Image (cartoon, rainbow, N blue to C red; front, side):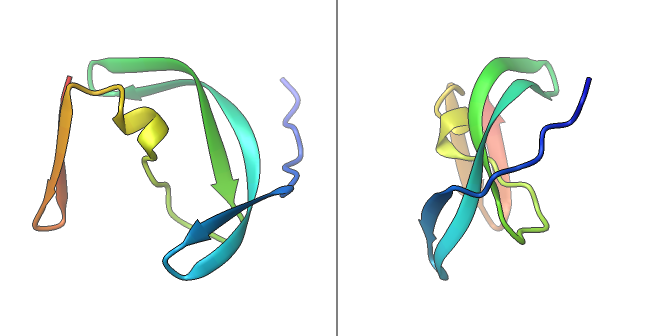
Length: 74
């Protein structure tokens, strides 16, 4: 499969200000035994870490962040 070049045509507001973003579709995401298919996502220009957005987190039964750790139930 040929890799598509990202087009940073969208903008997002973060705690550090506005950033450029490239809309993408993820075929699937697996976290342990949890599987999500066909998820909308964005790639933030210059960001060197992956973040879980609300588009994914809202699919879980619950999630909680405490002491720098995220606990997810599905």
